[in-house]
Image 1 (cartoon, rainbow, N blue to C red):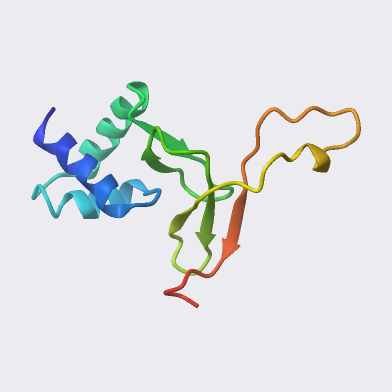
Image 2 (image 1 turned 135 degrees about the vertical axis):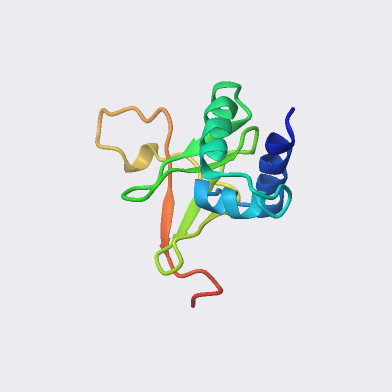
Length: 119
């Protein structure tokens, strides 16, 4: 466990939401001066491979990352500040929304609007 990896983990814990590489870079720099974006990307790749984090795909936006092992949840994208927030819980099965004869195996839900700070 390198000092840079500890700083990135601290950034995830402090951020408390899915983070972009740039957001991770800013937060990690508060713990380790002069950590560069290349180091962030290299650690993200390793952390994904080791299952420490998961990628959060955002339609038309850059991928965000969050710690793995969280309960099933969904996301809110602020279209003003471009930050992503966790939405705890889940509305439940989406099977009733699928066309007749289709089987739903999983789902992702993303809400888009303005966060509290931007509203």
